[in-house]
Length: 185
Image 1 (cartoon, rainbow, N blue to C red):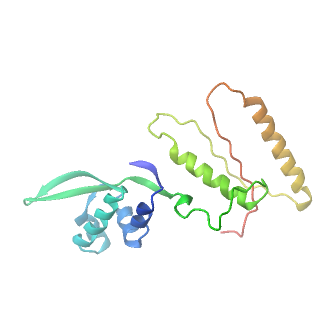
Image 2 (cartoon, one colour):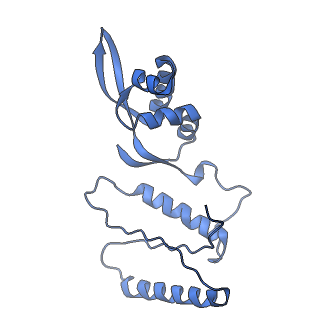
Image 3 (cartoon, rainbow, N blue to C red):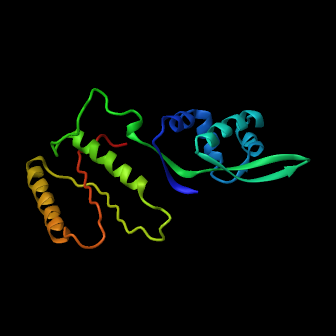
């Protein structure tokens, strides 16, 4: 089972985005038969099989084994991934917007997040080691010091790009997002 399956085909999204199928998919985190899933969800095995068949056709679920019970072949299925990401390209750009150029705009931040999501989805997860780091935190800045903070952050990052931006070695992408925090969740 993969950690992430990046969905770029509308047919995959259509197969996934039905509440009953999401529930079936959750039950298939571990290998199970349609009968076992049906019992957990209070559904008939035929109804669950219908949804499993659609998920298999979309490449979201795999048949991992088969067993014979009282002369009947019964498939054992498992979800293809622990997490499913929908590509923003499934909807596409509305209104012909072009890539935002202003680094301080919300549009630029959204473009950056799409790019990061696509890059992460394309990583080769079969490699034994994927050196990466994720850092997240909250910083509180008085309004009068915002520009000072942004200037210092930009200077620090530019210094890193200058020091490590040579043509030799493994290429790493560094994406930093700084945005105002909305209401507490």
